[in-house]
Image 1: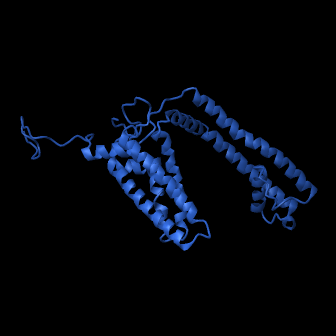
Image 2 (image 1 turned 120 degrees about the vertical axis):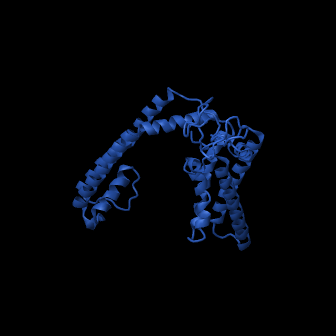
Image 3 (image 1 turned 135 degrees about the vertical axis):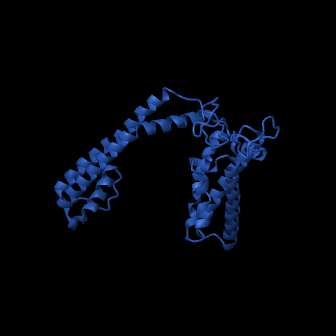
Length: 290
């Protein structure tokens, strides 16, 4: 019988290749600190991270205020880049702490963590790009896991499930509204004309959107009696349109609340997915053992 040159002889005590599920000690330790909030080290890391996130958002907002002295501006600029380097190192550490870095990089929090550092580097090439660093405030969503607010996490899952269940109904509703906007815009263009500010059908559609949503900027308004009559009907229709998506989502919220699920704060060591059921033994995203 032919034997592979890499095969071990029978009875050999030489260890074989490590299983795929095995985790290096340094990676396990890094994952515990970065992703787990149930340990003292992990909780201290997360609290320090929240402080850095809040500080970075405050720095970006303060930097946009005009009238700051050049000395203050230099301090804010230095603080912004120091925090950016810190978040960059943290992002790389998060990728290194999981067995499947690509799975984490394409997850919700992975994308948020990447967007938290990209605007700073984009600001080197595009003026004003660094002000999009306020997206870092999204990283504060981790506060529910850090402080073990599992009840809030379960309610967030209820809201997500309700929005997911009502997405088709809302899509049909939005298509209907878009159809009404096109019809009303064309109608007002014919009735009012360019002499009253309705210079085109798109301008009429803009007025229809503003009126249907009950915003009413007032920059364009009908001047003829027929146009005002149509506008009155559109305003009344707008109140009814606002109530439709509210009713759809409310119904799905009631249905989702009838089957609540307790959520743990544990993150998957392979793909860093969060939001698992309490007591889950396997990750819902990648299927690996927790």
